Length: 256
Image (cartoon, rainbow, N blue to C red; front, side, top):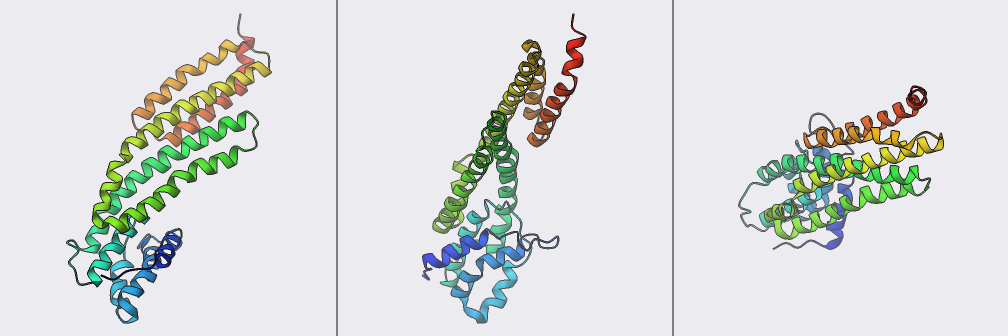
C-alpha cells in the first residue's frame, strides 16, 4: 500500500485552513477542497492522472470548515486504497456527499450556535468587570475546541477511513451543542443581571429593580429550548440592558 509522509499530511492539514479562500456560489468550497488535497493526489497519481482525478474533487463540496479535516483524512485513506488497487467499498464522491451535509449541520449548531455565544458571554462578563484580557479569553475559548476537532478529526479520518464517522458519533455533538446553547443562555442571563445591578448600584437606585430582569431571562431560556437562535437572544439581552439603562431613571421617578 502507498504510504504518505507526515510532511505531506501536514501540508494538507495546513491547506485546509484556507478551505474557503476560493468560495463561490457555484461550487462553494470545491476549489479550496481540491487545493488542500492536491499535494497528496499528486503523490498518489502523478501529474499525468491529476487532470482526471481533479474532476472528482474540484466540483461541488460544502461542509463545516472545522469538521472538513475529518472528511479530508477519510478521503485520503480512501484514495490510498484506490491507488493501491484495493476496493474502498464505496465511491469517494458518494462518501463526501454522504457526510458533508450532516457535518455541516452539526458543526453549525455546535460552533456557531453554541460555542460562539458561550465564549462571547464569558468575555462579556470579564469585560463588564473591567478585565482587559476579555478579548484574549474569547479567542482562546472559541478556538481551542475547533482546533482540537481539526487535529483529532483529521488523524482519526486518516487512520479509520469511512469508520471515522464513529469518531464524531461517539462525541455526541448534537447533545453537546444543546448543552452549550443552554449554558450560553444561563450565562448571558447572569451577565445581564450583573450589568443591571451594577448600573442600579452606581446610580444609587433600589437594587430590587434588578430582579425585573428575571422574567426576561426565563423567557430567553424558554425560547432557547424552542430552538430560537442563541445569537438572536444575545441581541435581545443587549437590547434589554440598553432599555434598563435608558429608562431606569424614569422608573424610579414613578416609584412611591
